[in-house]
Length: 343
Image (tube, rainbow, N blue to C red; front, side, top):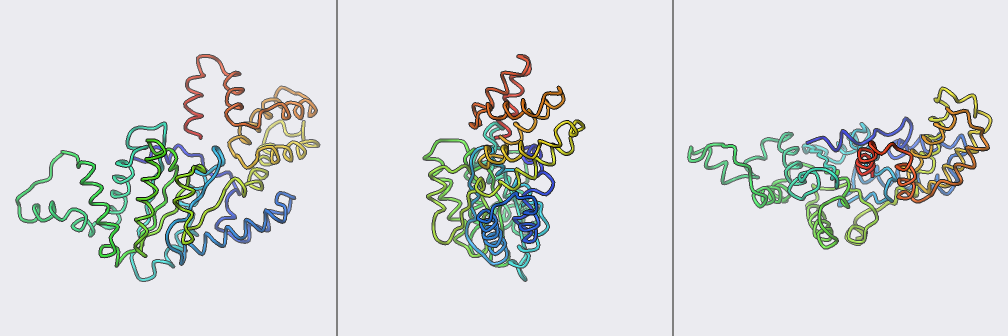
């Protein structure tokens, strides 16, 4: 049930903290890693997110290119204590219920289906608040209470699960609760663009209750951008905000490398170029940094590393092809699967 979340990389030390810590926005600027415009965008984004957490409604959408770090950010935010503190302010005297789900296009059926989404969220919510079970399954609860029915191993059909979840989202049921859901990877939901329009509509309908709100992430696909573009929702483009994080990550990787002394006089230029060429795509930067660190291990010159960096494709798919081309044939299938998980 938690396989996809467990497979998502943890945020590198010091990255993404600006989303929940206003002081980090300025302290992170000490090494020229954020231009003034970028710093202002971060401040605005952090303020919008924290305000949404403690008093906002509807949907906060994190949109971004493939490999921009959306899933890593969603995992970081879902585990951040500041997020829980702000949500508790929003809940006030009501019981706070927090649940998360991560779609995975390369996973099993439950990881990429609507049925998996409903089942997982329903399980998480009822685990935290079992008193809502009679509201979700009134017929079964009544039959069990009267001795007409007994629990058995037959799984619920999708329509039963969906109906139960929709009852859970109603104003009557949520009146004594505040529910916040984090849903990652909407673009990895199975189906085509028509299906994506449908799931976007369903998610929007959940927030009709003032006691339910969602933080969602996806690539910048039309169904999600348009469906969540309403004035009451908030949208951000994460790849426009991660230049400083990519710089911080790249510098740390170079500085922690056992062979750092060989490039310590030239590595800042490499970091500058990685930050610039990444265009906010964290996975691209991660792969490139690893490739350059391998070169340092082979005692190549900084000039050679610079030349190599400039020959690396800025397109993620082409970089995958270049990377897989250097892998032993017997390892390519496994590497391909790992890339699917990463994106």
